[in-house]
Length: 101
Image (tube, rainbow, N blue to C red; front, side, top):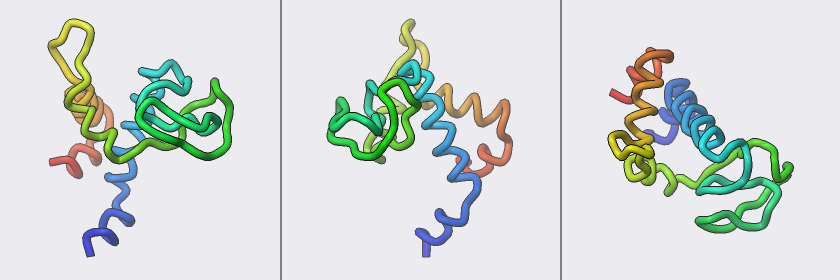
């Protein structure tokens, strides 16, 4: 039941796209970090599979990586990636904010 709701939810999909975009920006579009580099056989947190280049954008991430959104802090230590994600959703994607709240 909840699975079907998530599959149909455009808000959930947009949040996941935003997480992926933020991860790609943090990784410089490369294949480091917890996201899957779709070309290499492994990432920092485990193995990844797929097709793509070493300098291409990441196309997937582990769901366990979502836990790191609240643990990864800015260089000055005042904010987390989760804080930034919420700010992005609030400022630019109002329908996503409705999903989160």
